[in-house]
View (cartoon, helix red, strand yellow):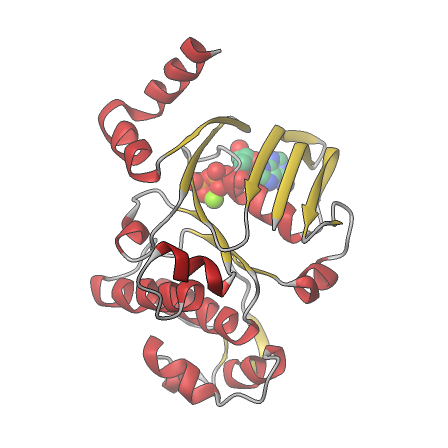
Amino acid sequence: MLEINNLSVEVGGKRILTNINLRVEMGYTHVLFGPNGAGKSALLMTIMGFSGYNAVEGEIIFKGEDITHMPVNERAKLGIGVMTQRPPNMTGIKLGEFVKLVSKKNINPEELAKPLDMIRFLDRDINVGFSGGEIKRSELLQLAAQKPDLYLLDEPESGVDLVSIEQIGSTIKKLLFGDATCAGERRKKGKSALIITHTGQILDYVEADKGYVLSNGMMLCTGNPRELLNQIKSKGYKGCIRCNREMS
Ligand SMILES: Nc1ncnc2c1ncn2[C@@H]1O[C@H](COP(=O)(O)OP(=O)(O)OP(=O)(O)O)[C@@H](O)[C@H]1O
Ligand SMILES: [Mg+2]
């Protein structure tokens, strides 16, 4: 579904990502680890096509189409959706109105908002005055309405209390896998995801197929997500850098 080949990205004239290669097949969920400032959010922003993230080398292919220089709204129409790390406040538009606007079918915003405990926020301006955890739920509600084929989720569990993590984790699981009980069924729904996580908490809800470690704008390694997480916990990112050096 998503294929990134030799991608290098500059922001404000500064090289942020170098020679990134990554594939997310249809129906697969991948997670991205990496220290602060590694370039994880920049990678998601570049895939989504936000302005200021300039792909100076390489290509991004989505559903067989080269989207490297495609505007953000066209990427959204093609089926890419993002939950950014720091979403903007949108004054003058109510969350409920927005949910109706971005949904492909005639949906009832209250029905979508209920599992995320967001009904009481539907008549408020988007994210204005929302707490950190409320913003995450608001963003996820907007994605649930949009129903993209590729979910780009930037730290969905960060700053979220234990009860809300359950709501967020279960909602993401439902969006990606429906009621699937095995890997084969999960694939059938055909939804893919690239999820940034520091803590790996999301892995308690969402079965991820592959993990990546990004450091200093470069992809260090790929592997089993839980094994990578345990390695990072025990040896830190320095261990990943050392390991990468030994492998190459
Ligand atoms: N407009 C900009 N001008 C210069 N540098 C920038 C700009 N935007 C981002 N950067 C730099 O790019 C690097 C990668 O940032 P990014 O937000 O992608 O990191 P991250 O891996 O998501 O980190 P975190 O885990 O803290 O969220 C950082 O060093 C950041 O300061
Ligand atoms: Mg980030």
